[in-house]
Length: 293
Ligand SMILES: NC(=O)c1ccc[n+]([C@@H]2O[C@H](COP(=O)([O-])OP(=O)(O)OC[C@H]3O[C@@H](n4cnc5c(N)ncnc54)[C@H](O)[C@@H]3O)[C@@H](O)[C@H]2O)c1
Image (cartoon, rainbow, N blue to C red; front, side):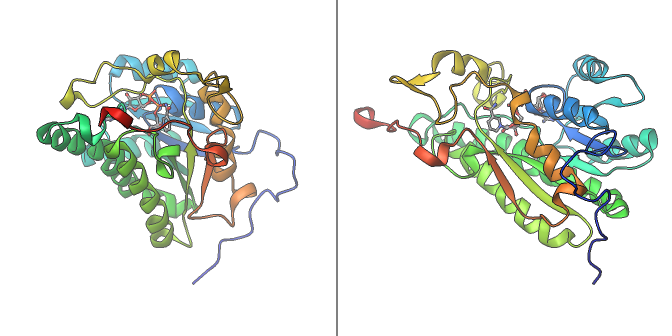
């Protein structure tokens, strides 16, 4: 077994000319909005070229154009539940930019805190299948399509995880189980793809994005942004130890750069950085059902 070669450029503490990801090529699922879009913009600012893949041709094309010109940003249409779409996204990225170094499995939906007590058996079954297909199978299919290219360059994977990958009250049981499952993907895939490909995750906390719900239970048009409009404090306290709910996706992009960067993270795999405003310090101060049960 061969170890990873020494990282280049050496980790000197200051960013190399051109940025921490100079010369790298990244593919980001669900990169047309929210944290995926913020990471795409930040990766380009750090010197990378990015392909974003998601649903809605016009939306993806507009998002890519707002990130940069065709020399640095490529918009691709695809559904993360489709092995063919994921294979095509990887192929098009390599055809356009010559290689693939970094994969960010990120596309997802939320379950809008639907408790087991608020779902019929059929609703639970339908929303489980839809959400796990996107949030878990979608991540695995992206890695399945990308690993042969990542191996060629000793590349890496950075998955978008969640506070719900570790804690309760970040969603209902379906979303929480799915985000815990993605912790399993980080660990198992880091094991399977070592020593050539690193696999890590960033467990982001609540952000005002356009995160939608399962179509199968009528939540396709709900946006998580509306939930934040209702809850920014708990009593007199900020929502989280570090901040209230006014943080933006851009505020979360640093760990995605660090983990993708050879100079900063060549010895890190199977790791998950919590970037959630300190939820673990205090926990959520709310109870669940109470007298409503
Ligand atoms: N917003 C939050 O509070 C929050 C908190 C923790 C974790 N996350 C995670 O962040 C990730 C990104 O979500 P976001 O908050 O940026 O919301 P978002 O809706 O802005 O981004 C999700 C993207 O995924 C795309 N997508 C959804 N289903 C898809 C499919 N089947 N195929 C292709 N693309 C699909 C959407 O079109 C969208 O562009 C998700 O994995 C989510 O679970 C979000």
